[in-house]
Amino acid sequence: MNFPSELKYTKDHEWLRVSGNEAFIGITDFAQRELGDIVYIDINSVGSEVSKDEVFGTVEAVKTVSDLFMPVTATVLEVNSDLNDNPELVNSDAYGKGWMVKVSLTDAAEVDGLLSADEYKALVGA
Image (cartoon, rainbow, N blue to C red; front, side, top):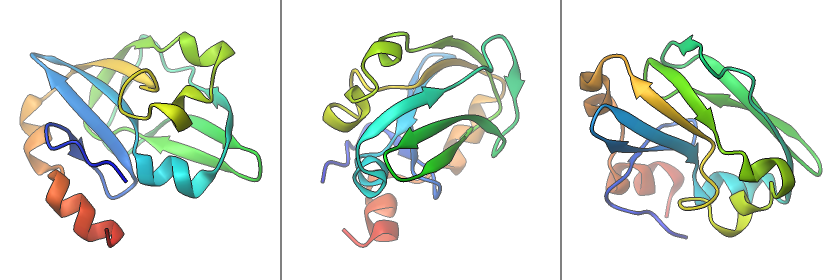
């Protein structure tokens, strides 16, 4: 399993890549392996401010549907439109082309409360 050290992680298995006051968010390699083949992603929160730990969408796999939780309070700027036709990008490239949303951070200090790669590895027992 892959745990890029430049990312921050949540206990709910989302990752966050910060770039200035914006960030990209997706689900971890661990999460996509646990879910299995991703077949559909539903995110309808574009333009909305979503509070930390609130649901911003869902991801559907062959056998289950799972909520996506916002790692930090942020406004959703964009949904990865490539996932409309290719939701399996999450399985093949969870930390790259499989990102879910681009957000504008409301309070960048919240990022400091997220898990490091080593802390996330320990959480999932890797």
